[in-house]
Length: 196
Image (cartoon, rainbow, N blue to C red; front, side, top):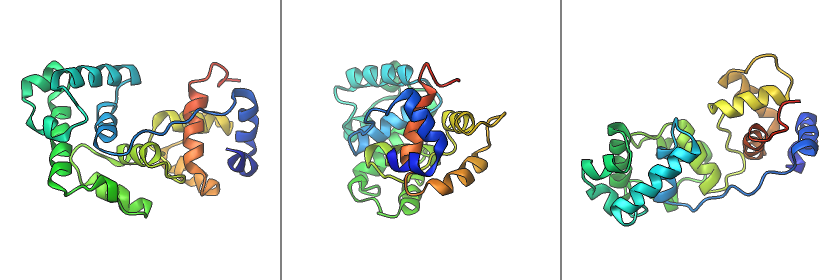
C-alpha cells in the first residue's frame, strides 16, 4: 500500500482517511475456487450462507469428490441454482481428473487466468479474484469488478463510474501493485468514510 500510495496521491490521501485494509488471503485450492463461484453476483453474506448449507449437506464441501458425487437435490437444498450446481460439478471434475492442477498453476498471471477460465463457470473476474486472494499474486487487477470501478472513480475524482477498459488503462501506472489497489478499492468501498 505504501508503494502504491507513493505512485498515486489519491490512494495516499484515502489511506490516511480509511486506514490500511486487513489481510484478505484465503487457502489455495478447490474450496476457495468453489467459494468464488458461489460468490458470483451475490453478496458475501449470501455466498457464506450457501457455503455453510453446502458443507452441512455434503459433510465436507471442500472435498471435490463429494461435490462431484452430489445429487441435484443436495445442491439445490444447499441453495445452488441449476447453473451454479453445474459450475460446481464442472470444477470438481476438473480438479479430481487432474486437468486443473490448482497447486501448479502457471507463474505467468495471464497464463494462470487462461487455465482457470477453461473451467465452465469461471470467467476472468473469478480467476482474478482466486489468484489475488488464494495465491496472493501482487499484480492481479480485477477491473471488471463493479466495486473496483466505482471506487477507482471516486478515488480519482471522476464524475461517473469509469468503464472496465478505462480502469484497466488507469491501473497500468500502478504496476506491480495493482492487487493492493484492488484490495484497497474494496476496503474503501466498504468504509463509512469512502464518500467525502
